[in-house]
Image: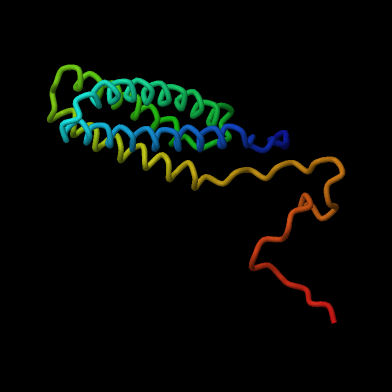
Length: 158
């Protein structure tokens, strides 16, 4: 008895994972810049640092939902789910340490958080996207009308 054919994994969850991971990396970079600005004496940056932290936490929760969509029917890898869950726990601890003014813990968690965000970013962009289904009226060779990839065979006419 053979098992039924498995549909290919959809592209959209992986595209969303790339999007949220990139947004998190940009927010983390901004967070580091705001912290540095505060330490340089621009005390107004602390309020922006707090607001950016809340935005970063929101995007982590959004990415957690995306990671579930990547994994949901068992077609995607498991690592985005557990790493994003770990990021969510770290962000929560980071925010709590910041409000408690526990700077040693806050800075340490910040370094770990930025490292984790960059790890997820690199992993998200390394995941191969499934091939798109051929559209009606597409080129018969399955290329979708796109140019061949560089490094492929080149035909020269005489």
